[in-house]
Amino acid sequence: MPESPAAVDVPPRTEPGATPPPRRIALARLRDFALVPGIIAIAVVGQLVNPVFLQYDNVINILQTMSEIALLVLAQTMVLVVGKMDLSLESTFGLAPGVAAWLTIGGGHSLGLLPSWTAVPVVLLVGVVVGALNALLIVRFGLSGFVVTLGMLIVLRGLLTGISGGQTFFGLPDSVLYLGTTLWAGIPASIWICVLLFAGGIVLLGYTRFGRSLYAIGGNEDAAKAAGIRTDRIVWIVLIGASVLAALGGLLLSGRLASVAAAQGNGYIFTVFAAAVIGGVSLNGGRGTLFGAFTGILLLYMIQNVLTLAGVPAQWIGALNGAIILIALVMSRITSGKRQT
Image (cartoon, rainbow, N blue to C red; front, side, top):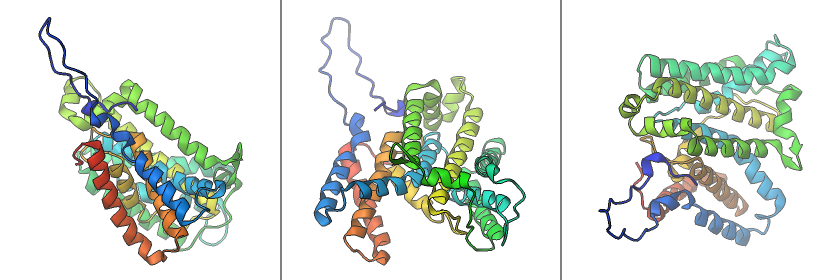
């Protein structure tokens, strides 16, 4: 996997004619794969706990349920790399499909003002609007990203509760159901979408000038400006893009469940940050890759599935997940050789 610019090892300078020192493999270069042994170990444990674990249907179930929140991880990772933070993604995840349902279906608390085919564009438009509002307050007015997005999280959550009356939207348009229920080549469309978006993001961050700019801004924004990088424009793009990804993730979940709950997305942000940090993404910006973040969310969902198959009571799974996250962080720190900040 490509090395993030902030973590590239600079070889020692040698005098002309001197024999260069033997090239050694930096442990930091392997940090993207730090969770792979853990994923393999969980797969083995899961199979021992219940032979169902590695069966096709269960693997597809893990990947499909993971794919929706994985888009939040993808979005948050890009925001963290650029040195910002977006807590409102979980609320956008619920509000965007909620607004689409409110405007396109009739009866109950819904208005039914728009034709059903507009549902998906409305979902994406809500993502654009929320991202633009965040960017306006953070970039244009120079406000704290943490405080702005925390306030936006509360506002958006309240809006979803208000338009839904605290109830669940049912009877969603076919355009919303399609992406959450259809199969492409025998595999749920949401899995394809997740994998393709992560692959595109890996290429974008690791092999393009735009991606290098994200790492430069996250590492030192002032230095990035001095180097001629249009930092404000890039942060705008990242914040809006992240909100659109969150809206799309909410669309996939709503399509699979054929409903939009008033509490959709609540509490997801904790899992998102955990997956990103476990995957080697720094909360201080400028370090981390999407492959690492992907392995982080995959590991968490595999663990959750193993606990469920083992018959662990639901009320204990949250506590065990938290403990496992801390253990995974320690293991990731040891195997990667990098301090996590």
